[in-house]
Structure formats: structure tokens, C-alpha cells
Image (tube, rainbow, N blue to C red; front, top):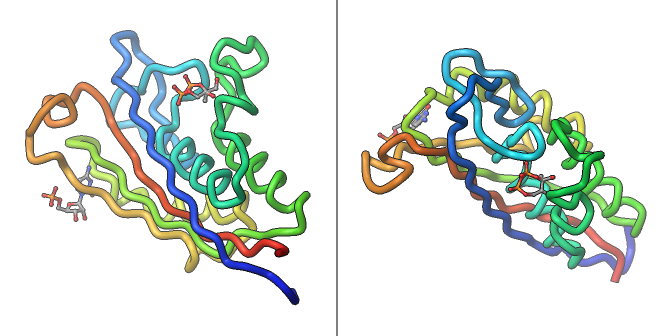
Length: 164
Ligand SMILES: Nc1ccn([C@@H]2O[C@H](COP(=O)(O)O)[C@@H](O)[C@H]2O)c(=O)n1
Ligand SMILES: C[C@@]1(CO)OP(=O)(O)OP(=O)(O)OC[C@H]1O
């Protein structure tokens, strides 16, 4: 691409654990060893942070604009579709995602065993190789709400190549 610029974006999200039994989705992957998160969608906090990072890099409004929290059409939606839509919006402007890097903050579950599946799921909707998707995890060292296992948070950065 000629006359293109590389732009970076940042995204953050946090969801509390559901009191009711609910499936846990992180990075588009169903994780069976821990109860799920509360949310209007499937509450995939990692996908939400990544979608906001992609949208932010392109200077677009955040996911709440495209997928309003109260919208009946978003109820239970797979957040991989939210990431896919963010990528589509970038591509409609002649851009593309270069890479994404994200961190999950969770006392549980152990994320590392699920990273290969998350990279597969995310790279498919981001239209990049799995080598361009970084996923890391840390506990909150038992500090604060995250440390008390009340929820899971995620942060992400994305870079996109956009026409000038
Ligand atoms: N939910 C998590 C949290 C951490 N990991 C992995 O463990 C490493 C050490 O975490 P600390 O919080 O004790 O620094 C971390 O680097 C991850 O590899 C994990 O898989 N899932
Ligand atoms: C993803 C959306 C879509 O209804 O809902 P939630 O699953 O509640 O997630 P949140 O990050 O709280 O808000 C963003 C919403 O756009």
C-alpha cells in the first residue's frame, strides 16, 4: 500500500463473574474449568478489548456504538463477531490489521493452555497470522476485586495500516 500510515489503538474491558452458571468465553474459546462472566453479549472480555483496540487505531467509535449494550440483537452475541465487525470496518476504509497484543488479568482460570486455540480463533477474524496475535496473562497477585476472583479484565493494543 502506498501513502499508508501505521496507527496504534488501545482497548480495555472488565467483566464480573456471573453468579448463575454461564459458559466462559475468552478470545473466542469456550473454557470449561471456570464459570462465565456477566454481560449482554457472551461477555468475552478479551475480544472486547481487542475490538476496541482495532476500532481505536482507526479512529472509529468504540464497540458500544456499533453494538449498543441494550440492543436485543446483541443479546448473547459471540464477541468474535464483534471483533470481525471491527476488522470489517477497518477494511471498508482500505486498511488492515497488522498485529494485536493483549493481556488478561485473572486469578483463574489458567490461560496459557488455551492460548493456541485463542490465537487460531482470533487470527481468523483479524485476518492476520497467529504469529501476529499476542496473548498473555497475569494474576492480580490476589490484590483488589480481580485478586478476589470477582472478575476478569483485559487490555489490548492493535496496529493497523490505513490509507493517509
Ligand atoms: N490466569 C493466568 C495467570 C497467569 N498465567 C501464567 O502464569 C504466569 C505467572 O503469573 P503471575 O501472575 O504469577 O505473574 C504468567 O506469566 C502466565 O504465563 C496464566 O496462564 N493464567
Ligand atoms: C459487548 C456489548 C454488546 O451488547 O455488551 P456486554 O457484553 O455487556 O459488554 P460490555 O463490554 O460491558 O459493553 C459493550 C457492549 O457493546
